[in-house]
Each structure stands twice: as structure tokens, then as C-alpha cells.
Length: 166
Figure 1 (cartoon, rainbow, N blue to C red):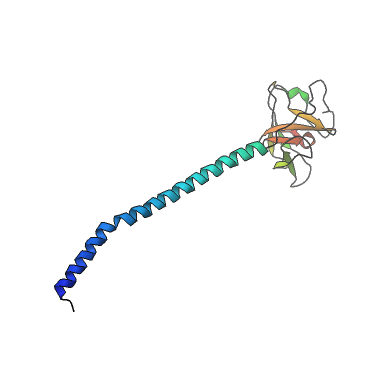
Figure 2: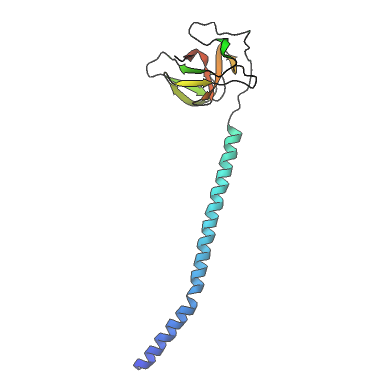
């Protein structure tokens, strides 16, 4: 059996070895942790960039098939209260579906076949968008007048469901 002094020497040697070897595994572990964190950051940035470009490439752009001008306007319908006199300035209008708790589909492009971008509720105020020539940005699709709105959701709506704000 070993004496107390010998055991204390062995214990001191083991402690000394532990102190000198201790930083190496810690540095290696920290290096792996930093490398893992860097990999996560790179993956997040790459997925964000990929998402940005995916949205840019898949968002349909409105295609003009037929436009109206102030001299030719199908706005003589009694259910639509839009007049061609507001062409020079943006106009605030409101949703008038005449359906209690009704909602109006805002679409990516003019026409019933386009995907729905959002919804507007009955009585909600909208801002009619103008083209670069300060004219009504509109299209006639299957006999229906579609106008582009810029607020609260940018997109296209059927003008039949809009009326002047009071």
C-alpha cells in the first residue's frame, strides 16, 4: 500500500496534467460550436435569398390586354358610380358589394382567373391607382371593368363593387 505522501504526489501530478490538457478540448469544442453557428447563419442567409428570388420570379405581373381611355368608357352602368372626370388625381373610393359582411377579392392581375392576393370588407376605403400618364389604370376583361388599386392591398378589383366615398 502507498503512503499518504505518495498518494498526494500522484494526485498533484494528475491535477497538473488536467490543467495543461484542459484548454485543448475546450478550444476544440468552442471551434466546433462556432463552426456550427456559422453554418446555421450561412443556411439562414441562403434560404432568405432563395425565398426573395422565388417570390420575385413567381409573382405574376399584370398583363395589359385591353385598356380604356377617357373617351371610351364602359362606366355608364347604374351600379358603378365611377366617373371619368377623376383621371388626373388619385381617388379614394369604398367597397360596395351590397352584401352584409361581404368581402371583395383583390387579385394579382385583372380578371376572375387571376389568383387572389387579399380581401377587402364591405365599406372599406380603397385608393385607385393611376398609370404613369395620370390616367385610370384599368382593363376590360369579359365585359367587366377592372381597376388597379394601391391601398390597402395593391392589386386589381372589379369596378362594379366600388362606389364613391362619402
